[in-house]
Amino acid sequence: MPEFTPTSKARVIAIANQKGGVGKTTTTINLGTALTMRGKTVLIIDLDPQGNASTGLGMAPETRSLTTYDLLVENAAIADVSRETSVENLFLAPATTDLSSADIELMSNSRRVFRLRAALTQLNALPKRVDYVLVDCPPSLNLLTVNAMVAADSVLVPLQSEFFALEGLSQLLLSVREVRETANPKLRIEGIVLTMYDRRNNLSRQVEEDARANLGELVFKTIIPRNVRVSEAPSFAMPVLRYDPSSQGSQAYLGLADEILERHELVA
Ligand code: ADP
Ligand code: MG
Image (cartoon, rainbow, N blue to C red; front, top):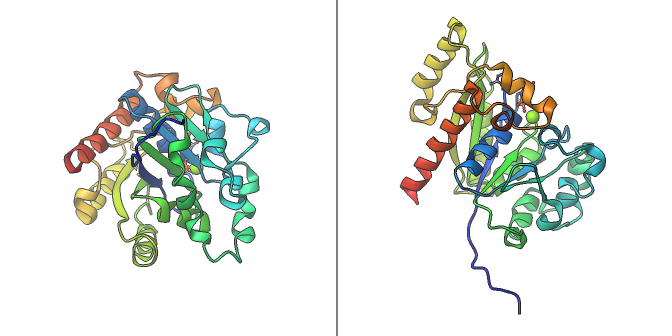
């Protein structure tokens, strides 16, 4: 008789910002790794057809047999799509460019925004109990991002410490509200994390000031600095926490994980 595993609820966090290059994928990979270093089991879902999270975790495109395309469009099981990574307790559901046609394939499906949520109901078929699911979203507020928001408990927004950073944020928050009103009333904002921060740069400080003034408590205390080790790590197919654990970038992502865990343990 199969062993009975009690249903345990993983926390699902969508990492979203419709701007490209703001640190979504970097945050997904490194926050995920940091959470495993704090004893959690994490599943990363690559929901970007560019597959950068998959590449960054060392999964070559030709080895991505079942992908998130199969998950959303072909009813593949999450346990079959998810794979181990080189990081202990970090699993990955990889993506390939196939995923870019998912929105067209799902066009006539009346449940199309619920595909990821439906897939995640089978999470306890994975070999380990998953504590956190991190969904790396594409740089767009398209059907894929909506699927992530519908499946998620919360949305984490990386905000690049650059001019125009706050522009577009209201559009993102509007999408969150829309999803809340239509498909997922419990959706929260996990927080906004400043990325690629350069403390010698006035602009970075100005973005931080503006963000904290306008968004208050939503902005994480932890700031991710611009750090060359962070940008080098993906070409070695590893999280920066593996590539150079003592780097500023690594330490910042551990800090972010701790801040999130602390909040969750307070409300648990
Ligand atoms: P997105 O997923 O939002 O498109 P990425 O995470 O891919 O953004 O980051 C965009 C680029 O910036 C990548 O080349 C990445 O290596 C680099 N990058 C991200 N975060 C940092 C950082 N803290 N310091 C230096 N480079 C970074
Ligand atoms: Mg990305």
